[in-house]
Structures are given as structure tokens and as C-alpha cells.
Length: 151
Ligand SMILES: [Cu+2]
Image (cartoon, rainbow, N blue to C red):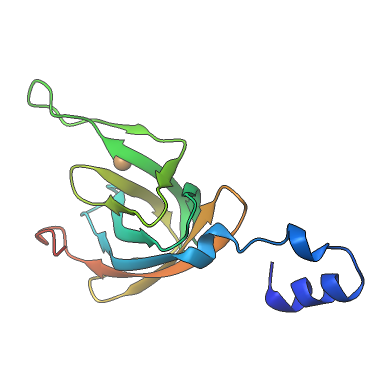
């Protein structure tokens, strides 16, 4: 909810003052946000470090972008038999005053169906969606496939 509409809701008495809590996204800051671009039609991966300054957990449940038609939260599987796999993750909790990292070999955003050909140096906005329906838009820097984890 935008603060303007929140104020408007107060003004017309829709929200009792005691019922209002800051949204989860308000407590979360994102850093080291980048996208590893892969050649051809291979999906790209989005990485970001999330810090929760709040006194309760913030839970990431999904993400979306105007650039990528498909954005999914994934976790890489522990390497088994020389094959790397991954699986979808329904939610990722960032504990109170804690940190969560989306980083190579761990959690990542799986990015598919871009609306344009992206190149290193581009910026892509991806919005993180939290369990209380609050949102955090984050600017991701597009980097080449051979980027070492810069975190
Ligand atoms: Cu994946």
C-alpha cells in the first residue's frame, strides 16, 4: 500500500491505528543484485543479498519483472553424480535482523522469456513479493556468463 492510500484510509477510518504494522518489504534492503546472463535461450539467474532490519521475519514468496515473463524462486541441489539440478522453492524466510543470500550454488531467481535481448551492463528491475503482499523493487545489473561470484 502506498503511503498516500494508507493516509487516506486513516482519514476515512478504514484502518484502526493499532492495526497498522510496517510492511515486510519496508524492513528489507537488497544489495549485490545481479543477473548471470547465459548464451542462447538458456535461462538467466538472478542473485541478491537481502538484509532484514525488522523485528519479525520477512518471507519472500515470489518475484516478478516486466522484462522476464517467467521469474521463479529456485534452489540448486547439492551436487549428485556430477549433475547439477535445482528445484522450485515456495518461500524463503529472512529472519528478524537476519540475512538471506541468493547466490551461485544456492538460492536464485530463475529468469526466462526476456522481452528483449539483454547484454552485460543492462539494468533489469525485478520486484520481490513478500508474504504480506508488500513489494520491493530491485535493480539487477546484468553480467556475463563467466562472472565470478562478486559477493
Ligand atoms: Cu533455477
